[in-house]
Length: 355
Length: 135
Ligand SMILES: [Zn+2]
Image (cartoon, rainbow over all chains, first blue to last red; front, side):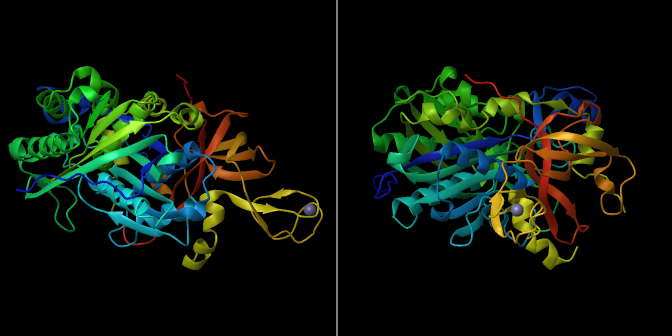
């Protein structure tokens, strides 16, 4: 294998605005256990977010994007030349989520719009592409959004964690940014850990196979590849955010890579909102940016089944302090919380057959 | 509503886009191309902030056809901070929490879906203003 080279755009690129969204409803994991395991067994998280009846990936992506625009300030909508939404739960099989979002934020018609798919990596895949699109000079601004309303087979291990949420990033010139992209690196192989065939409601997964050869292998190699090529070490980062399908995996991978619990705690939201799939690591990053200070460095590593990871190294700028409070913080959404029981959950996820 | 009719209203529905009367300055929602105050033609688009308060409301337990899945839900007359009154569903709120004068903000949500096969219509609803903490 030749020496790893990091990804770096010709022109410096950064995050001009970021925004999160988490729905109001929570399903406690104990509720899932009550219905499916007689209340026995350990639960992987405390509770997960559940979308309301009138919410889907479009509405979630849109509110996150509006928050990102509020933080960005006075951005000419005509200069947003891409609106890219990564998700595994686009409302339509054919008809883009991204055109609806682009229309609603006023970015149409002179824009790219596209939906990205790569399980939980779809959001950071769009992010990487947006960095390239801005960094090449083709666009002044580009939107990368990860949003999901994830479905799991009722009673399956994933029923405890499959959640809903979104995070949006407006990429633009580094000198307008609240955090600049230092470099990134992606690591992808053909690994069958989790999948859903066409026309199937629920995904299938490889059980224990989802751990070592999938999650841990890809995150570890993406993070190490990036840090070795950049010459950085875990202690150079104030924060690290990893894809978080449960509480155990990100804690374990952080420890193996040499990060401390303190470095990952601010971005580790899974215990309180669940696995938001394409938004998982990206929404963790919004919570980190909500409290980061100028000069802080952040390592973000996503994971998507199938399988691959994007590792991105960021440095926060002085602009963070004045922009942060132009939109709700991620914790504000997490604090807005209405617990529901499994029967209500089943209604909100349309699991009852009505005709 | 027809596909074309829904499509023509998308800016009004997604962005709360109305009109401003160039003659007397009235802000108009929904857009009607003629100023209700001075009857001058009014076609200049104006995007409302989405902030307002509940003027009156009612909770619907027996919904009309097409909205059965959402019941019960609360419909409100919302007075926008710019002045116009809008009729819309409230969302992310329990019926017993709603009160006259409650501050609300616009969100875009699913309004209706034509079964499993038809088009999904998105549009404005209002929710209680999100409580915010500042660090
Ligand atoms: Zn007038």
